[in-house]
Image (tube, rainbow, N blue to C red; front, side):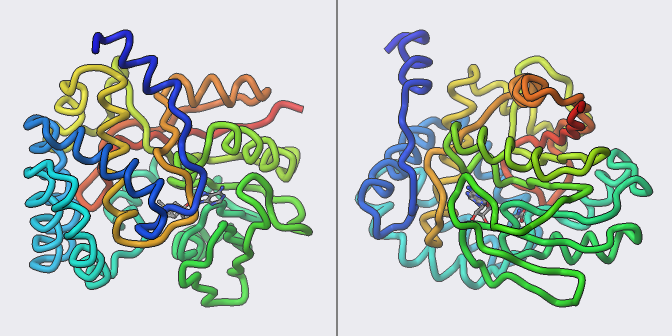
Length: 318
Ligand SMILES: C[S@@+](CC[C@H](N)C(=O)[O-])C[C@H]1O[C@@H](n2cnc3c(N)ncnc32)[C@H](O)[C@@H]1O
């Protein structure tokens, strides 16, 4: 298929809503297909392997290395049946990893400079909070943050370790729990790409409605760019990602790297993810009447995930 045809196929693709679970056959065939398509390409496989080794082996030692080898041993075969047969083993190795929040303390430190730490405070919501550990981190790190409420579409051992930290389940993917009130800061950290495009759109609108007059929406997202210069390009990963050959290939790669964690755990999220490049994130927020500052773009530090990170601060103009 030519390049133009390929772009059209990717963009016209309708993701599976949720749940994403190895017990959901529609998800499973989609994910196995995405995984095998990307990882029969040697360049993509080597990049995926190196990113995961950086992520998990350095972070979780031998257990991490065993997990990455299990995943890529199968990926290199590019054989859907072997991949399906190996899922139970992947699940058990993954459980042993016991990974916490997605960003390592090292990456947090690098981001703090950009977030202007003194400026982060007040009532804070973390939408798509996962295990809620980022809320715990915020309360410990930013003295002016008075309380954090994490929300999510599923309960992932959500920690509520202190009085100022709460967790609430969302009634639907595109709406927030009732009676949340108004926030000074709303964070969405690596949650948006797990939603369908129209869910991203309405959830962002809802978040903006919940912001105080001087409030800010801060988005951390897996993103990519063919022309932005990354602030940090650890081990040349960003240049290698760009070398995959265009936006559609990069999105396929990000989809595949997101497939295997879902093989290992049941998730309430759509698949493939909805990835936008750095320009598209800024345009989306500006179209909603926000002033947008892009404060970070790059692959920040060891312990971080497989995609470049973009951080955007949006202030609604009222
Ligand atoms: C990759 S995890 C990130 C978790 C956490 N924010 C972190 O950075 O460690 C993505 C999270 O987004 C959540 N999610 C997916 N769709 C969502 C939606 N429509 N609304 C809220 N959360 C959602 C998932 O349940 C999952 O916990």
